[in-house]
Image 1: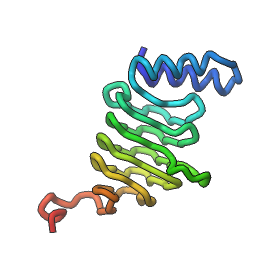
Image 2: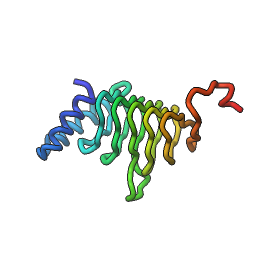
Image 3: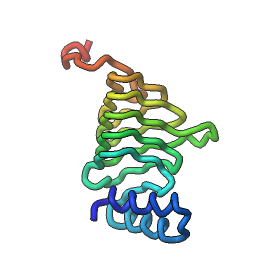
Image 4: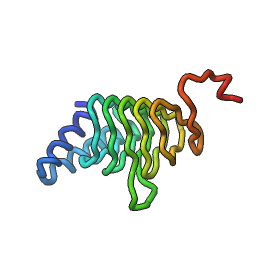
Length: 147
């Protein structure tokens, strides 16, 4: 059974208010896949966790859309403030080691580069790269990005 399937079962049991079992399944994901994905998180359809979510940490209140690809080592969480956590749109690609922190929104079709630290909103169909992340339009060549 894959990590996302274990999460989906735990999430369903959590919604049905069944005690203990969702936490046990959460623990299974933690031990087997080093994946922190609480049953209370909202994860859309066809989400792909690279390498079964190895090293991925997702906040319990995060919202992740449909067809999102999440690479290993990604963190989606808060900044210790009570005002919110990331909301990720549909068809988003999040690169290895990226950090999405705070009450931000990532628009549909956006791409987050490897090891980017995203602290502000990312509009739809754009690319976020760097520390802290800069927003660039999609489709630029590597030569244009260097200038």
